[in-house]
Image 1: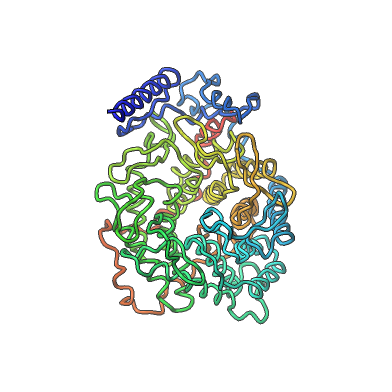
Image 2: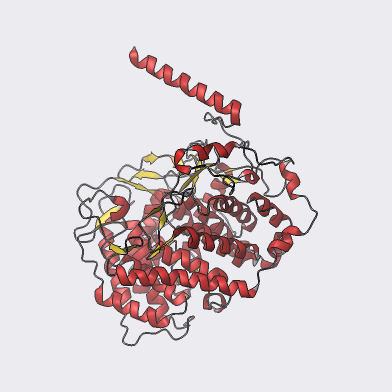
Length: 616
């Protein structure tokens, strides 16, 4: 009977606590109801930390400031009414001199991190920018997957950075880096790494650098390397072969999450993996297959995507975030846009763009519709109607009910994906939400509770997702507002994360305390997108060829070579996608018309975004 008393006591305690929150702040939980639209917050109220707030963030007192009012007296929609040109005046212009200054600042940021890595850390995987030392796998603690999933003792940061050197126009250093990789890197290592991380950071970069070295169109000028004999492609092939054991002996065709590069799948490995980790291999594996004429790699990657797709809910069309690779049972039933899910959706669309396989776009279109129907909350239009602006939440994959009240920073990639899909208006609106959070902290906390309007997880590891979406929105709209956003992000990173030998992870976005780690994606993605944002004349923007970025920011051309297979379709016959709604709509039909979006942004959109981030 004692346990019943404990349960009843805990339930009464929760009811009392929620009632107090409701009375005081209107922050009571949703109680698992269907949560129609009423968030109890508006984006213009994200005035979390003005400079006048002097509370010690470590004391917890800063949380009390989250619930204070900030003097907004007008109804929410009145902030977006016509009248006055102050918004357009503020953001409709970005001087060329300032653009050049920001481009130089982004370049200097990259080289400060890169040169210190080469000086203090190479050939180790990462730079510890505070202690000015290198970092490799944690061999003393094999269970430290936060480190060991990524670091394989294969000069990760150098490899991950190769194509960024070309984007910055440094052909000589690119050549030196390629030679270093060829001469020093081997994958014959007793390292257990995550298949997903090795694929996007290492395999993707080797393939990208190889293509750029051998590209007949040479968008970056004459970058061919004398006596180059496809060594990067051979390294990529060697790594991919070492990842293949992950796909063996699984009951579903969904790969194991980790492999040892010498011995294959470890005997004590788990049978659970996340949807993004297993379903985001197709771009790199598919390009490799089409470059070398071996269908194996594309076949296993497509089989994994198909297996995941066929496990989606019959009711909602959604997938969960963690699955058992032997039974096909969903271990994690949360469906969202962030960690564990993000790049699965991204690669459905990018695989279609690269390979032209209609099944990929059919899956993406169906997934996008399910996301819109079940994850999106708020009013239908970004700028019209009653209620709060749209937000994408985490829900139960089987019934669409909200599972928690946080979003994570990885979700900030989604506006960029919406741009690629031609849904620019929704991209503008969602991007404004993430920028509003950045504006308050000078960084994106890893998790943010949209109901409490406070961070749940406080660190920021120099992630690129918001920068990527900012860059793609600027390319789609050419609106100078996004240059202002980029400048704000660039200056915040410089101000809050720069240390003696590089740029450090923020341990706490409020007090700006730091951790001694600079992940490779800071140089391969964050700095790259910041530089490209301010470099209008970059060869990627001027080339007659078209390019796309992998989920790790590596440049690959949209090339007819990748739409041609050197094998018969029969070899992949069991990859025919089933249970996918039929559509005749081409992705190209939804590519945005730049002229359509450039002008409205300077009026209604700009006033909305300006007020959302508290700049008015």
